[in-house]
Structures are given as C-alpha cells and as structure tokens.
Image (cartoon, rainbow, N blue to C red):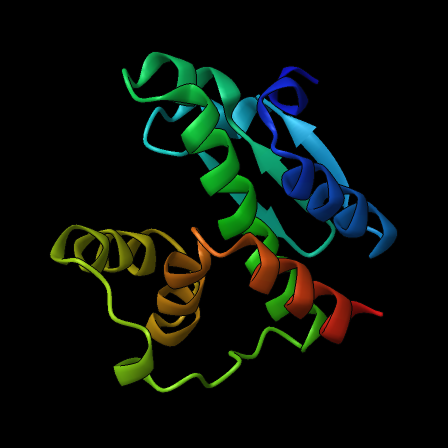
Length: 138
C-alpha cells in the first residue's frame, strides 16, 4: 500500500492499532472514484484514497497523515458503539474552513456533527488519536 510510504512513525503505530482492533486497511477502493474523498471508515474497514490525495494538488505526506488521524479517530468512535467522546465544542476550536468541512462531511455521511467535529479537531493530534484507539478499542 503506497500510503504507508508517507506515514510518520506515529501514523504507522496508529495503523497497526487499527489493524489490531480488527479493521482491514484498504487503499484506492472503488469508493475512491469520487474525487471528493480522501478516506472513510465503516464497521470493519479503514480506506485511504491515496490517488485522490495525490491528485488534489496538496502536500501528499501532510494529507495522508491527516486523513489517517481523522479516520482512525472514527475507528475509536466505532469501538465506543459509534458514540462521540463528548469533548465540549468550546474545547475544540477549529478554523472556519474546517467547520465548513464538518458540514460537508455530515451531509455526505451518517455521522453526527459532534463526531465529525472531534475527528477534524484530532487530525493534527496523533498522540490523542493513538490514545483514544487504545482506550476504546482494547
């Protein structure tokens, strides 16, 4: 899987924990033909759309890692029975661009606003992502 080449050391640890939590990890599946997606999680699979990230014109390493952190946060949500962590919104400030991304994600999925907010907030906090996977999945 090509996306593994872009991962930080903690990104690799997070993927190992996702696999230990009984999730398969896939790349560039048919779902990724929709160019709007960089990744997704369902009940037993985490998918990274590496080709979409590469063709987005953005920094590939940055967005592969950010996507892994975001989707791995959803793995932790699923280990909780697809419940949010209930972090108060006031404690998770986000820029306007990410707030708009939350709205798009909520429209395109079955996620709640709280769950998406938590995942977007944790995208740049890999240590916290690792912690919630370990806390809720093992």
